[in-house]
Amino acid sequence: MTRIIGIDPGLNGAIAVLQGEILDIIDMPTLTIERNGKSKRQVSASDLAQIIRRFAPDDVKPTVAFCEKVGAVSGQGVTSVFSFGRSFGMIEGILATLQIATTFVPPATWTKGVGRSPGKDASRARAMELFPS
Image 1 (cartoon, one colour):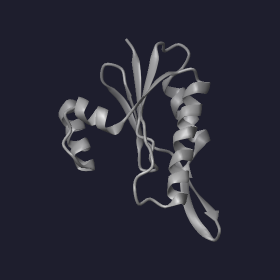
Image 2 (spheres, rainbow, N blue to C red):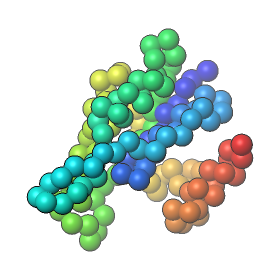
Image 3 (cartoon, rainbow, N blue to C red):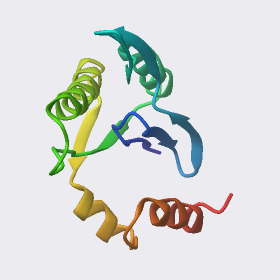
Image 4 (cartoon, one colour):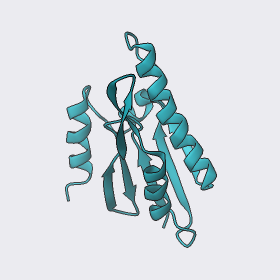
């Protein structure tokens, strides 16, 4: 049976692992750094790589990943857009390095595909409908 890794790439995103049923859901690993006198959160590359490797060991094949294909949002600042792009690229690089077949899915595609209503809370509600346990 195929193991599936689903990734919401934002700082407040998560990694979900399924193999017939939900095996685990993990918050996106972040760390806080000081930059220009301000505390900033960013995705922790080493922690993210450890999480993905733990759920995609060589003896569990096939493993595939689906990651939300994100882009800049109108009104976001340059720093925010760069930070988001950095996180997305990090995820793409880790998945490629671990040779995990990956599909990047635009938000409009996956929300329509799962029958989700608009809004972040609607995603959680739909997930609970699909996976009640």
